[in-house]
Length: 128
Image (cartoon, rainbow, N blue to C red; front, side, top):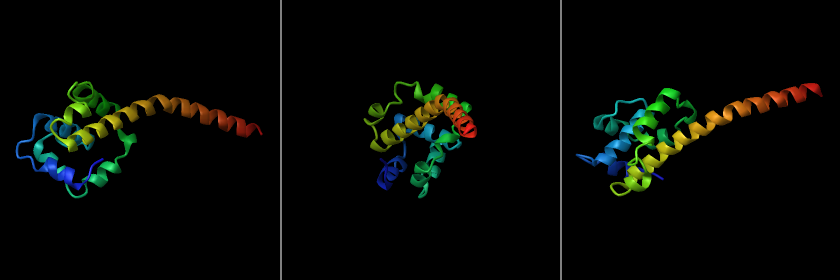
């Protein structure tokens, strides 16, 4: 879990380690922001933790998921235990991005089944 000191840790890097930059680029992608260090510092303002915890996990579209998967999710270095060697905060952010991606993949599989279940339920209720 992240707190203000974690945000300060990341923002305090004058020249962040490559893995921190890598993770933060994925976070910028989630927020449809340019994937630069300058944008990272702007994004990590006082409202960042709230934005991250309130992030609408259902808005990951296929284009964004495709970019996340190709650039980050499939990368061996985009693993929380790998990132932890350079930054505890980046480890948590990496885990968060992976979790959001995985949720969206499961939701994509469940949506048709949920729709079918609701349709069957509606039909059953209308027969009564």
